[in-house]
Each structure stands twice: as C-alpha cells, then as structure tokens.
Amino acid sequence: MTDAARKAGRRLARDFNEIENLQVSKKGPADFVSKADFKAEEIIFDELSRARPGYGFLMEERGAVEGSDKTHRWIVDPLDGTLNFLHAQPHFAVSIALEREGELIAGVIYNPASDELFHAEKGRGAYMNDRRLRVSSRRHLEECVIATGTPYFGKKGHAQFLKELHKIMPFAAGIRRYGAASLDLAWTAAGRFDGFWERTLQPWDIAAGIVMVREAGGYAGSITGTGDVMETGDIVAGNEAMMNELRKRLADAA
Ligand code: 2AM
Ligand code: CA
Ligand code: CA
Ligand code: CA
Figure (spheres, rainbow, N blue to C red):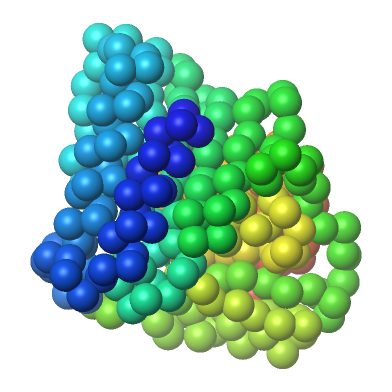
C-alpha cells in the first residue's frame, strides 16, 4: 500500500515539474482531470492488483472495479488536489484506503512534494514517516486553526457555506482552505489543524483520512452525528471537544 502510494507519488512529482506539457480535460464545470491523474491511478491499480490479487477497487477515475474477493476493497484517489497540482501549487496527495467487510482498516496519504507519507492501520496508530501522530489537544476555538473546503464552481451550497463560516470564522484563531481534503484530514491527525469540516465529499477524498484521524486519537464522522459519513460525504473531524464544537456551530447555521 505504501509502496503503491510512493510509486504513484514519484510519478506525480515528475509530472508536476512539467505541468505545462500535461494533457488536461474537463469532467464537468471546473472539474479538471489530467494525464497525471490517470497515470497515477494506473500505477496504483497495477501495484495493488499484483500485491493483493482479487481485491476490489473504488477509484475516482475508473469508478468501481469488482474483485473476486468480496470482503476487501481499495478506495483510491490517485491525485487529490488536482487544481493545486495544475496551478503549480505543491499541496496535493495520493490517497489510498483499505476496507474490510465495509470497515475502514488502513489508510495512506502521500504528499510527494513535501515527501510526507501519512499512514495508519486500525489499532496500530497513525504515523507521518516514522513519527507517531496525535491530534491536537486544544479545546478552545479561539486558539484553533480550522480547515474547511468551499463548494466549487457549478455546485450548490455556497450560501449555506457562508452561513457556516459566519458561525465559525469570527471565533477561531484561523481558517484555512487548501483544497486537498485528504491532506486536511492528515494534517488534522498530525495536530496541524485542530479541526476540519467540509460537505459533499466523495469516499475517495476522505476514506484514508478518516482512519488517520481516528488512529491519531481523534474523531471523524458525519456533521449531524447521524448516518454514515462515507455515504453523506459531510464530514467533521478533530479532537472530541473540537468535533463537538464544530457540530454545534454547524447545526446553528442550518
Ligand atoms: P480532487 O482534486 O481529487 O478532485 C476539496 O474541496 C476537495 O474537493 C478536493 O479533495 C478535490 O479533490 C475535490 N474537488 C475539487 N474541485 C472539484 C470539482 N470541480 N469536482 C469534483 N471534486 C472536486
Ligand atoms: Ca477530481
Ligand atoms: Ca479528491
Ligand atoms: Ca482526484
């Protein structure tokens, strides 16, 4: 899993140095995909298929690929933060999660530009390279840096997002919006962010990050506190106090 992430990441780093030569297409309004996304996905698919024949896949670009083994499934975002990547901003990642019988059991998030490999396995903790990760212990919003993601062009929910921001931004030390959900969660696991929320994300944006945050002693779940976050894609994460604080404020904004 980490080998696959590193190999795909190395390829992304190479393409990142020549983004002007990359073929870019549009999947929808302001929804870009490049040859680098497809190439990284191919590398991950080939590596994981060889390492664990029969496991199924859910990948951003290929969609669902059935495996003969019905209990295991890889959930893959080959390039999270495509827009950053295409704008020469070194904040993007490969994100791979493993699910067993519907339960997330491992995650890897690799940012090749900083060479930071975040990895976690259920029951075994979360790490950045060799360093054990722990979510922040800050309990007061006024001391906290909170990450979020804005709905992008062509999507609904901008007005709602501004209402939510209004309930959180004036009370926090800072708000950050870096544009790669997997790294927002990895950084929350690392304590760099004290909390994170975003709506309508896809399973491949958050699967690995959820394992990371939980194994770092934090919480990641749905915004309302009900339903499966992997299905709704409305996520809140952080230590217990921050998760509850964000949930309360987001409910007030509704
Ligand atoms: P991506 O780069 O893999 O597409 C940040 O808000 C998250 O939303 C990112 O993880 C990003 O993942 C995703 N995203 C950003 N713009 C998008 C778009 N136009 N369509 C779909 N997903 C998008
Ligand atoms: Ca995309
Ligand atoms: Ca993504
Ligand atoms: Ca992607």
